[in-house]
Length: 512
Ligand code: AHR
Image (cartoon, rainbow, N blue to C red; front, side, top):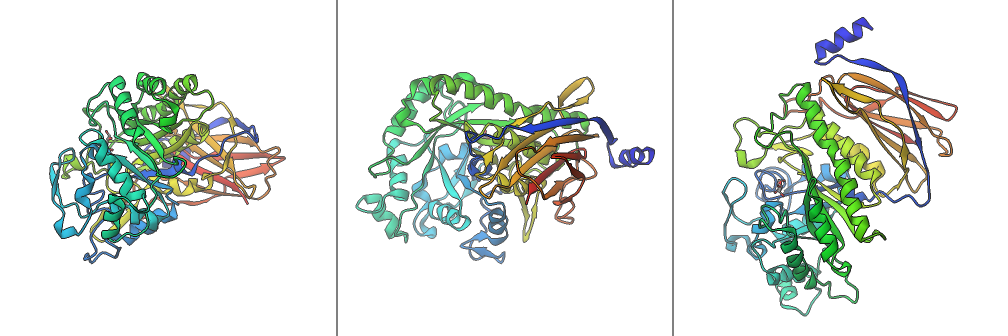
């Protein structure tokens, strides 16, 4: 043991073993909700190097691309079965004039991206590029429309342009621009952060605006199969959700949004890679607040919607730190370490366990911005620890939740304490059970005993994401420092699975 502690000290934090096994069991029930694959959604804003120089390099680039979008990014996102992609913002959405992004590229006017760095964009990536990309990815598009500085007419023209088969001016325009069939976009955000960059509105004022916009949104079919998402609250602003649920008729709304970022101090967010255990602990504390927020917003929703007809969509979440040295502060470019893997694993477990109400979520953001799954540098592209967590959790997409019973051991640091372990589990259509476990404890291994009775589990395979130091990350010179490896530190005995979870690790166990 001495050798182990010494080794661990050399690695950064002291590893120790938590003696007592934590008991975990599941309450399999046919009534348990399905974990919507849309919980594993992503977000691509016109921000920094997300779209331009991230996804989109243009079709004359020497970087291999399909219609201007990097092939390495397309392949990476297909691998994690990206279910939906939110675009074009964010704050940018409420400044975006979609008509400037259609038609021949040479004729498109430029625009200034006022929120993010004040740079001039040439509108070369527009509606066709985005929707064709979603088709290529097999992902549902989720368009955030401009409410803050737009009009109802602009908004509904956009809807008509993307969804109307024929016989309308916008369908005609789309066809003239080379796209015969409509894309049939289902998911529409009615503005973004309307309490802030979307227009600094009160909840009451926005509820009226929301009703106005959603009234004119129709799919032109017999039934309205659009999914309209009201711009939601930030963190613990329960009043915002209350007003929307109280004032908007159910016929006009399918979901309410929620945004929460794991930020320890907005004035001093700290380095993405250079942090100590105190900062790590505080980041995790902020990230884990998601559970309380989801529960409390759901409680408010239950009050007005006891039959659970309106969904909660967490359309922005993730870790947010200071930008990397020497990069544009408006571009929000940050590295991604094992801390981010912990945030991703624990947050996705929260969403899975609340999949009764949470039907969609979008990590902020996909490429080169905030808690990205991929970073690019010219021809090079690397996948982050967060990417690997999303890959491991694909097993939960559209599987039936196995509600979990357990009391987590504590991860204590200088008098504070957090639950060290988070778990979620599901059974897929083939009858396989998948269990995802996260141990956020920076120094202690935790042992868990999982009761598998009644789950018909025999052969189990495991995968793990771990590293020597919590600050570890992949770089362009060392892109595979952190990757998924086989996990074998478990034993199945008499229907009980004994698992040892190393410090700051994500483990997925699957019955085969
Ligand atoms: O994701 C970055 C920004 O964070 C988004 O544009 C905005 O909605 C949020 O404040």
